[in-house]
Image 1: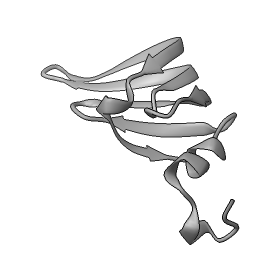
Image 2: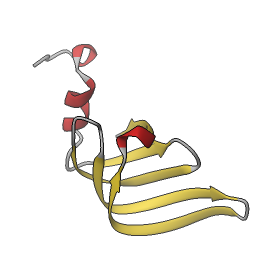
Image 3: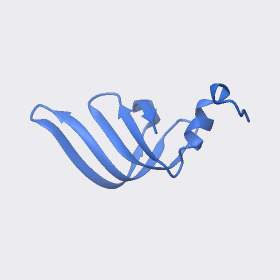
Image 4: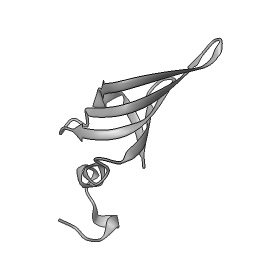
Length: 80
């Protein structure tokens, strides 16, 4: 495993975020903030204590969720 952050593999970086609050921007008009509980090789993610922000024609809609499974194919950006 690499010690230099510039040599981290994407999966190692995501693994370091388990148990932390992360911000996920999805393809489309959704963003989510929640605690990362796990992920797989396809970057499907399980988040808990989630707040979902969605842009609609009426404005921004905010939804609180206990838990969500995100499809890795629809994730654009992950930030801690």
